[in-house]
Length: 370
Image 1 (tube, rainbow, N blue to C red):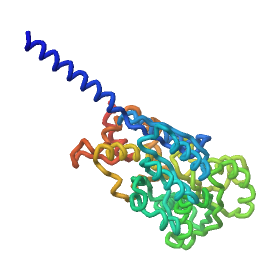
Image 2: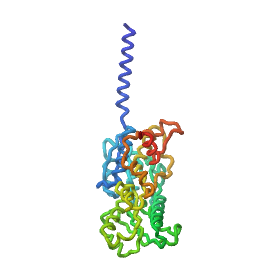
Image 3: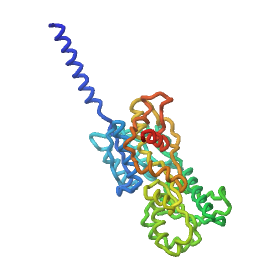
Image 4: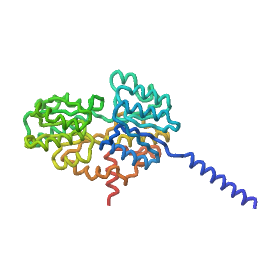
């Protein structure tokens, strides 16, 4: 009888211990400040993929949508920092002008954070330094090589023109985003046209602050100024789509073969590439918040993948030659059939670890198809 009671007591203690442990082991709470309150298609893409990744790796993901400017970000960070229950980790895209103030506030609030997209240059870069150099709660950044992306797009647009028999001079008009580092890095390729071909000329780069409505409003003025334009290089697909709409509604321009390309792999852009109305789109960076979440989970489990600060090698170009390969894949984003936990590193040996990129997601997707 005594042994039976002892056995029952052991079981009861084990049950209580397991129950308490289950309560304590709650999912990580990560807040992602999405830098656009209006929800343009690209950030919808980024957010949807992040939510899918979070579900698979047991992270409680909170999305906060703000306007895409430094003032809105600062206001959001203020509110998050003053919460009684702060997130375990924070993901956001910093802006030039007040990044130092934002970083100092998060440091004072002791909230570990990861930044997206933004490279710092010049004086601001010297002041901010590298992750964990001056701000120990700045775990790392998820950046990608926008300069390389600019060259990928430019090469695809030149190839598109030459493929359609244009062997004479090419005249490029650039449609930039804003004056931030991201847009400027993408447009660097346009300032180095001599490395491509002496028959390639840059007309001008216009900054429309990622606003397709402004592109539409100013298109007629741009084309009157540069009627010889046969390539429109755009820093984003939404602006490229706005250009195509204006070109197709202008009978006098339709007869001219104009190559248009952008960034982001938006579904509408890929359909335009398929139909031949658009030449190319550079993308892959919609994975960036997902990359941050996977690295946060690994970091929390003791594997610090933020210690390697190289830029993510995710950018690829989709053009008329490979769009059929990518369309079925991208149309299923955020790929609910994929278990994103396979991209974690902390519970795997070195030889079984996978990089989180489109190539590896496509491989997994293909394996699961009948």
